[in-house]
Each structure stands twice: as C-alpha cells, then as structure tokens.
Image (cartoon, rainbow, N blue to C red; front, side):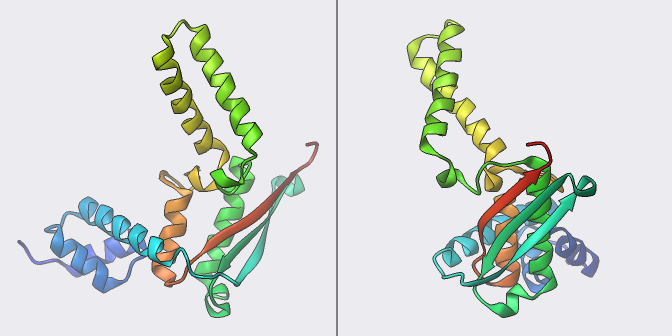
Length: 198
C-alpha cells in the first residue's frame, strides 16, 4: 500500500465534507482508491445518521427561497438538536439547498409517510391497469405496478428525489451527510411551495 498524500485527503474532503482524519483513514482502508473511499464514507455516514435518527430535534430554522422573479416561492422547516448548529453556515446552506430543491422539483411530500394513502392507492391502481391493458400475465402485473410506484416515489417525495445539484445522490443522502458533518439529527419537518397561477 502506497502512502496517502495530503492532496488525496483534501480532494476526498472536498467531495464528501467529512473531516480530514476520517478521510485519511478511509483512503488507507481502500488503498488510495478515491471512489471506494467515497462509498465507504457514505456507508458510514448513513449508519451514523441512523443512530442519531431517534434524537429529538427541537431547534432549527425556516428558510425561504424565491425563484423566477417571484413566480415560485418556497418555505421549508429544517430542524436539528441545538440552536448552535441551527446558526451555522453549513446548516443554513443545507436548508437553502433543500428549499431550492422544492422549488425546482416540486415534490408533494417530505417522505412516503407524508403522502395521502388514497393518492398512493390511486397511483398503484393506474399502474396495475396499465400493466393489465398491455397484456401482461397476472403474476407480472404486481411487479410492474410496484416498480412504477417506486419510480413515482422518487419523483414526488423530497427525500427520495435525485438531488438537483448532484443527480447521482438522493436528497436523503445529502441530509445524512449533513448529519455526519454536524453531529446532530436533522429532520426536514415540512415545506410549502407556491407557484403563480397554480
């Protein structure tokens, strides 16, 4: 195994936002393979975020974003555990990016639990009917409908959407990475999106 250089560590830090020591350790464990180190840090970040998920979030902020000269507006509440973190530039940047995501991608809910059960069932019914109408056998119909419903979730649930600034990541990945960087549970509580004429 070769020596890990400071520039490798710096590049990994820039791409993940994770601390220098964790970046160095990840590069050592992956023999300097940058992409493998990114995957390793993302996996660890999701595990750390899951551990923090139950912690109470009673602080945070409401962020606003106005787009297209006042044609689209978003208010979003993002919560964390302490006022200290809520006031950091990193947390504010996250909230602003999430507000921009809502403006651009127009989700219906924060997550799957936030969707109306009747709306979900109606979508599933449409997908089943489409599969049946195309002559698929009954055992395949449910698989096709479930696959289409999964794609629909990725369009209408904020946390399931592809992140507008980096479509290779989901919004939930971006939030989990912020949890790892800031060391606190972070919850996207709610949002409202306004568009002129809608």
